[in-house]
Length: 145
Image 1 (cartoon, rainbow, N blue to C red):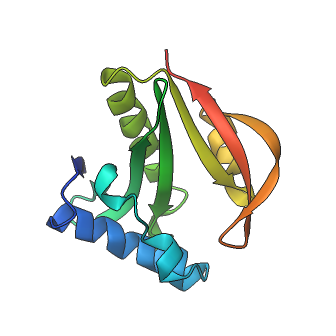
Image 2: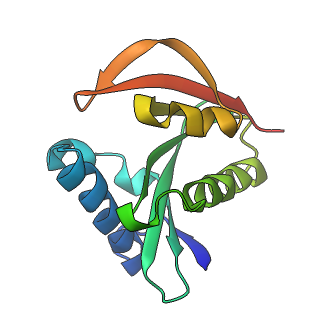
Image 3: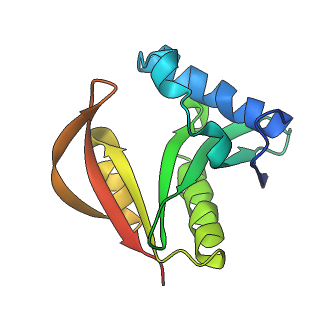
């Protein structure tokens, strides 16, 4: 298993991230492509977790914000690999990267079905439920130590 990252939207790593996102968000959840692939792609750091067979298993991206904040987005794990800690592993890697870069707070919009996952990782729910891509979400934040 390995986790790699890129800012290069022409790289194979980025294309693997998009392939996972296409499967999970567009095909499984019905998110329109014009929402899923957005204007922030080139501004983000894209992470992909590969299995021992070099198959892309999980992905997420970090979008730098202002005031020492960074946003975790597009976290997805291929269906057959869910429940095997790959989501936790890639989020921890993204958090480690953010901390190394000097960010103090990581924020995200969590789908309701993922609230428990993020709470176990130390994220705190804030505010009211909101819709993103017609899916219920909550804002969550975590202070990076």
